[in-house]
Amino acid sequence: DAGVIQSPRHEVTEMGQEVTLRCKPISGHNSLFWYRQTMMRGLELLIYFNNNVPIDDSGMPEDRFSAKMPNASFSTLKIQPSEPRDSAVYFCASSSTLGREQETQYFGPGTRLLVL
Amino acid sequence: GQQLNQSPQSMFIQEGEDVSMNCTSSSIFNTWLWYKQDPGEGPVLLIALYKAGELTSNGRLTAQFGITRKDSFLNISASIPSDVGIYFCAPTGANNLFFGTGTRLTVIP
Image 1: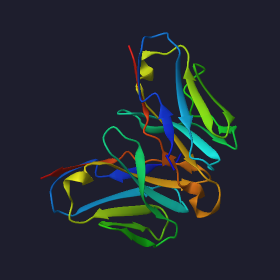
Image 2: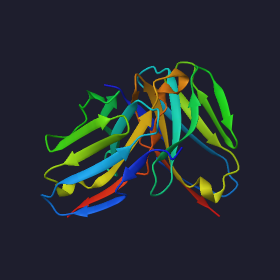
Image 3: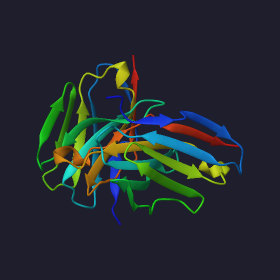
Image 4: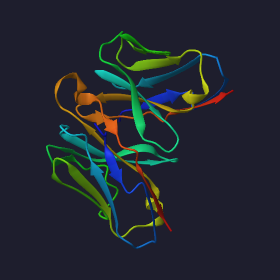
């Protein structure tokens, strides 16, 4: 399996622009998670989906952030408009809800976002 | 709210030395995971612990799930340069991972 795939790996944009991050979970996994990592705050859960349905979005910082999962193999995290404080590494992770593996999340390589 | 303390925050060790790090939480968990993050990459699962008191090894790594289900430690024996990275404890339940602040390990050849 290719693992969790994220794109782009790096993104540099200007304040005010829209940013879209993409994720393809591991095939067969039915839970998907978006995290943000910064030096100051560490790893923070933004939102997670189960069977393509958003379950908990309490970690989404504000209305500028939105996430969708139109099907089992694709999710997007959008920031509009972006601000410099959004600069961080954004990780996508997926897991299966079957058996003992249900609580093990597998992470993608991350998208490094810099907002100027 | 739930509190998770991971220590130490950073370690500088000589190649060949053993390493120990631990996490304690204010809540009880049913599963405890340890991840490693290499520079520029996402966290990768190292060891998963599912039972209180469980001691599990994976090569040079050994981890234990505390009997109170509120703590865990990770040991690395005979460290090598590629052990460099950030190690995170991640107690978990109900599809939610709580990540520790990480232990940044530097191995000096």
